Amino acid sequence: MKNFFIITVVYFVMFSILLYSQEVCETIPIQGEIINTTSDNGIYLSSKGNLKVLVVFVSFKDDSSYHSNWPVGQPPNDYSTFIDPDSQTNSTIYNNLNKLF
Amino acid sequence: MSLGSYNVTGEVIYVETPQNKNSYIISGSYPDRYLATKDVLINKVDPVINFATYDNWTTTSDYTHINQPDSVVDMIVMIWRGLVFANWWSGEASLGYGNLYNVENGTIKIKAGYGNNAGSGVTVHYWVERPLEYTSHSTVHEIGHWLLGSAHPYGGPDEHGFWGIMRHSNDGICANTQERERLGWITPTLITSDALNVTISDYITTGAAFKFHPSNGYTNEYFYFENHQKLSVFDYATRNDNDKGIFVLHQQDIYNGSNNIRCKTSKWSMELDIK
Image (tube, rainbow over all chains, first blue to last red; front, side, top):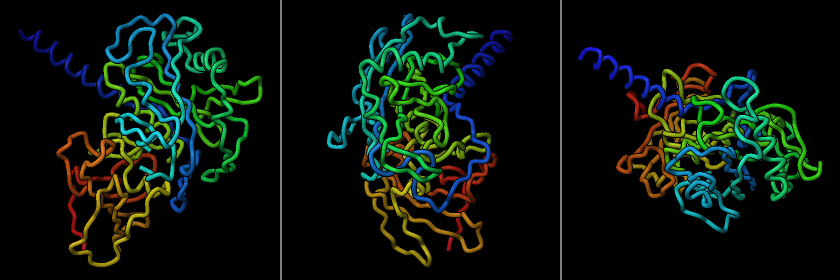
């Protein structure tokens, strides 16, 4: 019983760590990067005007693992609304990049 | 978030890698991200996409950008099925680092790094047991690094309940006042004297916000006030639809790369004594 309790606790802790870890951004801070507090623009990309973005959903050719939101050999569910082709489309879908910016 | 001043548009495409996963493994158990990305973009995407469409900007220096092509692709978002390059991260602001390569018969370049004139895109892991919403949040965050810099001011051991582009993808991803102001998307009203019976419109849909600089505070110390009424599906300050009201953000100073305690919110324990 004691071993079962310990295993359960360890499993829970490991699962929690895994859940947290997958939210991590791998971007490494640039040494010496200077933030300009008086600028009203993006540092490496403009934050004004039009930014055209190519979104590539990609899977490995031999990936046959099951995933509930992304069928094998096909694009993921709802992927076509990920970004609007132009600003006139005006999507109101929750995952739309245009509106999130 | 930008209220129309920043239009992020484009197209989506789905492809499979030209080779099996093991073909891209150089060492260890994970495939090499740079090699896999390069192979996909050159051999699967280039034949069907005109990359020149995605070359519209030239960066002359940090914060200075000209709306004209420079023969380098501006932004590609590579979204991979599953945690294929590592099981500990959801996104990264580059295309895997490494040498630049050419597409469009050598007329357009793709750069694989991150920073001033160093890259052409970001990488996102689609954590497929979660809905696409989380992937879109990760994408906003990674593109956000190109707009706001490389730091993570709202993470780490001192993290608090927070919302913002630079938060994790499972938290509120809507841009906070400090971010929207820095990007030139809104101009918060500066409070310089008593502000009684003030009306604040919905933050997300109108961009209305107030900011206050304590007279005895640090140079860059501000309190920001936002009214989140959840009128928009893009109001991700929190994921609870009932979390409506005034949200307060306290920035003690510009994030210095290590001290997350400089940024607090009203969701955290905060004492306010503002006059």
